[in-house]
Image (cartoon, rainbow, N blue to C red; front, side):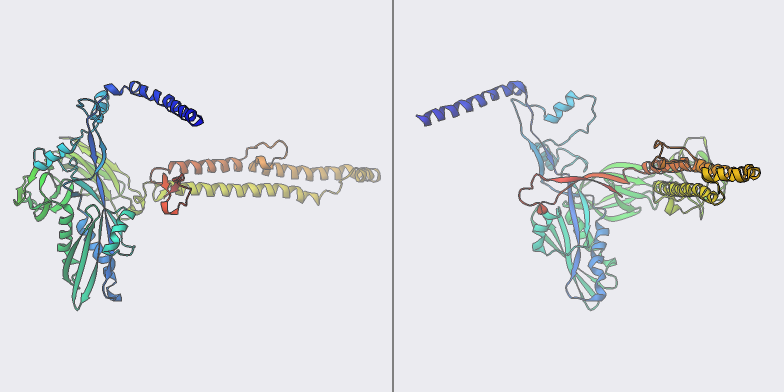
Length: 544
């Protein structure tokens, strides 16, 4: 019977706690809500570059341990994206409700008309399939199949073996690992490289042979092979010229390829954004289509910027004047023709800090610049954005102000000491120090008493006057004022306070996002013992 009563009570408790749940649908209006499913894909991957291992130990070839990966790094620097046909989804939002027609983000955008957001081109697997089939074309920055690559240099760590890469990749957050070994035989260098792909779980080997003397110069094909593999998509050769103009900078999808005339460069096929720039010409922008098996060739015609604007530059010392990278001459310059538009003016002289100024030249108008050149070192001054005077920073002035306050405090201490010494020096000259001695002297020598009394009084007055003057210059700090613990202003106290305020002011002005950093540092899980899982990390503040 007891068991039946207990079971009945448990059922009643469950029912009473479950009934309110039926009202949640109405509370949140779930029956009227419906959202179409959507997905977000991975946006970045890390490429970790390790040092290499020497197959046979040779102290004279140890420079290759870090030298080989450094050369490969120079070949991989312009690797912006890796192409993945089936990118890894980060978050999947499943459909909800009846006949959903908009995703959650689309409904939020409709209800927030004043908020501007970038339109999301790919919302589900169907959109991604349209990209694969060619029904839809997108630039790489909007195509989730193009994943940004970040290169991490771990040259000081021990190079992992291929088997160790499987566990090390997750530990170091490396999606790709590049390392290898090398061997020197006579005058030839044999290099073996392996590329570990953590997502695919496979290792791709590479081999290359060069001469020892020209190892770095001859390692370009090896870097090119690794880069093509990481690009993950069919490539085609790109050749770009600029109507005979040499030295124009060529960019594809924001990636620098080289200068015109450009030929033999390989790039992944697909819709691309071409950008060509040369000083003195209007930039050339063009959308192009790179196709598999079809080399791309383009001879772009650059439009010359007409020099129908003028500039005059004067300075307190003779200096060289540059507009962008174009040399204009030495100051003073009067009404020199320049192209219209935005540019940067630089006035430079040995032993002086370079003068910079942005120029917005308008057609048929003259820009007049009066540059004041200051002595100093340009590389020292502009190395630190906090420089406020010549080569001195906010931190320097805060330190100087603090030293100044210490100097004035030392003066304050000395003046107080000198004030006390004035009293001490007068004590030896004062003989009438008590009433009995004064009465006795007056009775025995009444004629001399008034003379000696005046002399003694004058000594005391002089000592008090000197002590007061010294104390007036020094002032009194509350900790030394025994009467009422109040601050008594004096030149030394005032200057000491001004220096402290100046030090604090310069220090605060020097604080910015590059000087002080606030953050949250998670604790390494391996260092947390059992029962400490609630300790996830701690905040920190550090000065750079």
